[in-house]
Image (tube, rainbow, N blue to C red):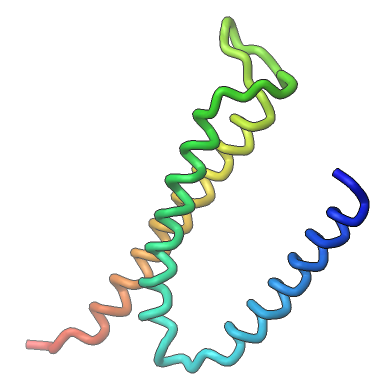
Amino acid sequence: MEAHELIMLITVFVLAVFLGFELISRVPPTLHTPLMSGSNAISGITLVGAMLSAGADATGAVLFQIGTVEVSITSLLGFMAVVFATINVIGGFLVTDRMHRMFNKRK
């Protein structure tokens, strides 16, 4: 990767951080639950991508070997992405369910 490509990627990342912060800070509290439900769908897509990455046949460097199984950096990072995306999806659904129960009519 050349220096100008790296600078471009860092610039896009920094702009995305600032834009994300500005968007999230301006969301009114009444919209947090619907946005949480929408982000769960996006996290589900992330989970599929993480599983594909974890199961990819990486030709990269082998970090360590367990018996006959070689663990590469791609599969390790993919596994970590699966774990974090799963936590995000489950946590989001729990929060959404709790918010929905708060709005149920009481008998």
